[in-house]
Image 1 (cartoon, rainbow, N blue to C red):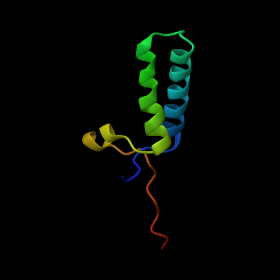
Image 2: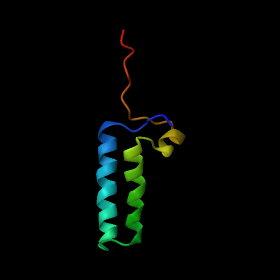
Image 3: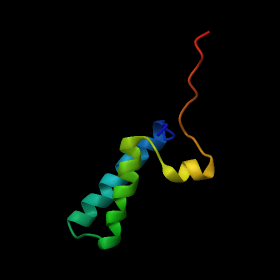
Length: 66
């Protein structure tokens, strides 16, 4: 798995995931809020399977050092 989620995208996924999971755990939102596990996992892992299917990548390009 090559990382394809970077920077702001990664932070946003983690924050949104944590908020949704917390709201689901407290019963504030219904069962659908457990979907927050998906953005949380993709943010923590730095890899999004949907990005691979769509040919997207938000990671910055690494310089060749030359």
